Image (cartoon, rainbow, N blue to C red; front, side, top):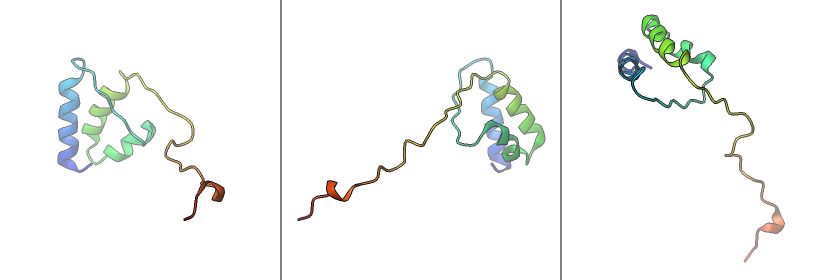
Length: 79
């Protein structure tokens, strides 16, 4: 996130904290979030304090549902 995006995100989180539910979905592990936000350490600390410490987290495990199934040659009909 660039500087302005980070400040905008912080403002959204600050406005919603304790007032509304917020759903955040990320492929990036929570342990790596600070590294992405550290361009402004004050904002990063404020955002993560509000998100991480009051969150209900669901860490999904398993193989990707996007994996393509292999197609057997016998399944393909030729014309």
